[in-house]
Image (cartoon, rainbow, N blue to C red; front, side):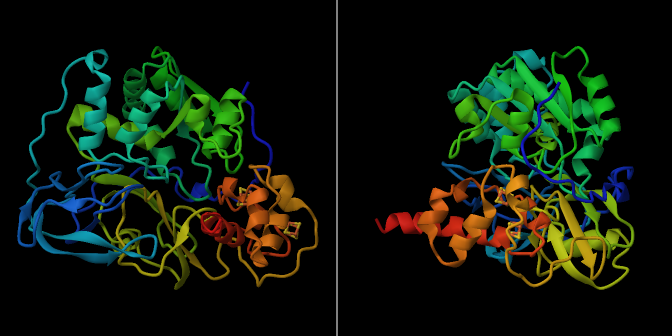
Length: 441
Ligand code: SF4
Ligand code: SF4
């Protein structure tokens, strides 16, 4: 019997638009790709190629000597036309390698592992994860090799594989669990082998019964448990997931590994499988393209560096002019200002909404009526209304005392607020100010 977490909401999920859509995996290679040298938490990579070079699909084109990083690879074969700053998903320009397709399908030679999984050492698994440039694909883009090493050092005893995918609209992980469960389960076994843990649980929300059944059938006999969790946003948040699986709370300011847990996304597991048994670096990922302005919503297997414009084109373009484009889900995603931004390793979705479409609409901020709804839904047990009042008056010490740094920016408070206050923006602003305030002391 699974626990749940306090708070949370039940938004209109609208996953039915793509939940039965088989992943389209035969898209033609794009004419060009833009590969940002920073697609992860940590230091940006240095380019390993120069303008005019011919690069092969799968070739490493950016790397870093030390620190927190993940190398990047060419996702098509072609000529490097530019290495220059380009807009990325966060609205800033980052150094990127622009590759023009040369029309060939040459692929870099690799040597997949052919031995037994149980013969792999932790160092070998970490090296495969590093060389393949794998990052957390559920959103955070934390380099996998660094997470595995830290988990080893911290003696993690409990591994949770996250297949909840609790954001509305997104079905990329859902389809991955239905269509390539063996990759995910073997990836989970690889993580178990690396960390030497016994306790591995794959979590799936109960709004994906076909994924639950497929994962259970595939994991049968492996010693890995598949747990069906009640559907509630943000069930896929690390702290909420750990609470649901173990019943344990992570204290304010602490991380999952502080209580012996590590959480990995299902598609991250599949990427580790591909790196080791297929010799494939992370150059493709599944992206859900959906929203009220999209002609034919779909799940697409796309090459890293493909532009948003290309993805919408593959989905039949727009039925109406989109007034809002979001990557990463409507609750925690990021609004986009251009269709020329490339897909990166943690791009799980691309959504386009028409005005008065099927997303939540926001009116101008009004006055708090002290209804308390924001407090009752906050999964981090914060008091959003009090933090908001202090944040708008620049009282950041009070915000810190109210534990605003624990805010995961899930958007649940803003979703239920009848006054439509900009609560998440206030949290984000307060969080960004707190280190600065502390530095003055
Ligand atoms: S955005 Fe922050 S304050 Fe609002 S509900 Fe989520 S965790 Fe709580
Ligand atoms: S939900 Fe909105 S109106 Fe209600 S207490 Fe919170 S901030 Fe105020």
